[in-house]
Amino acid sequence: MTALSIVVPCFNEEECVRLLHGRLSGAARTTFGDNYEIILVNDGSKDRTWSIMQEMSAADPHLTCVNLSRNHGHQLALTAGLDLARGHRILIVDADLQDPPELLGPMLEVMEREGADVVYGVRRSRAGETRFKRATAHAFYRLLSSATEIDIPLDAGDFRLMSRRALDVLLAMPEQARFVRGMVAWIGFKQLPFPYDRAERAAGESKYPLGKMIRFALDALTGFSSAPLKLASHAGLLLSLSSLLIIVYIGYAFLTGRNIQGWTSLMLVVVVLGAVQMFVLAMMGEYIGRLYSQAKNRPLYIVQDIAGAARTPRKMLG
Ligand code: UDP
Ligand code: MG
Image (cartoon, rainbow, N blue to C red; front, side, top):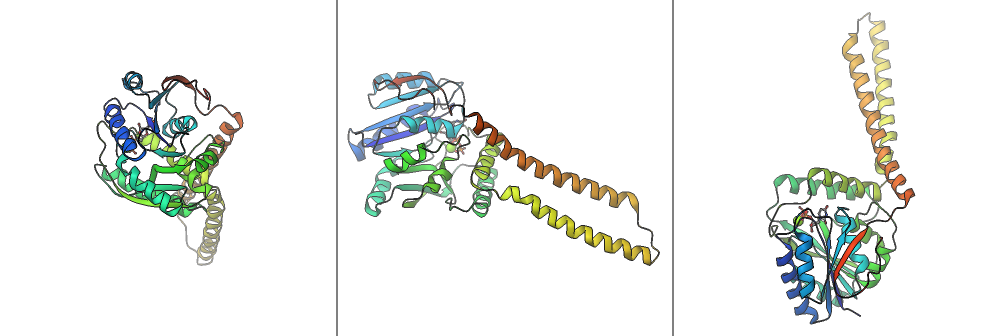
């Protein structure tokens, strides 16, 4: 059995993949000698990522490259790679080398010493990221942990070393909206943090524009918490209390012969009620949309080609 599989989702990473391949191979060789495989997943890149991958895989028997039929998103591209991994241990990293592959050795040491199934990287610091990114990420992990019942580690990305049995459980989970780091936390077993300093992107720009970040956050929240659905009851309670206060105030005004101004107060009530209702409906919509896509039960991803490491694909549809 292959001792280690390294899995990397790549989207428009033409400037990073060669460097990535070199650093991954070096780290794997140092720790596992010749007994490793690297799986790069091209997530429908528009640049030269796939052709570079093909060139590299022709020259390196350790390398398998998977070409998805279109951009499926970070978490599904990662899942496609994990589905192909045959290793006894599995390392997940980002293509931009923000997660130093050289930490493989120390992470493995923690895993073996402590008998853990998962060793996950926790970002002690984040170099070269915008203030906006750091602030939203900080708020996101805290909001998520306050809304969920399971302990999803704060400030941990997908950078992690996993055991085969943890990966098998992960891959047996059929959900379509995948928030992998939360799903891994949900599995249980012994999981240990590994603090590290997150490096700057090796080249290029973040492949996570605001729209993708919001979708990612909503997948996490709806996948691991029903707290947003309970907002309706909280809002209902609050509005009922406010309506009681308003009734008392109207009675008081009537008895003391005061005139209450109409337009402002009516407008306020209409706008606040409208906003609360729309917000609650939108939250329900997020869950219903995900129920719908789960009910359709389409494959998670579609593999177009596989290059390298001579073998027939285990799965073309995820
Ligand atoms: N990625 C992907 N598909 C996408 C967006 C991103 O496979 O649609 C990959 C990307 O190539 C990288 C990882 O996901 O390996 C994380 O993306 P990025 O580094 O741009 O995110 P950031 O570090 O800025 O949060
Ligand atoms: Mg990055």
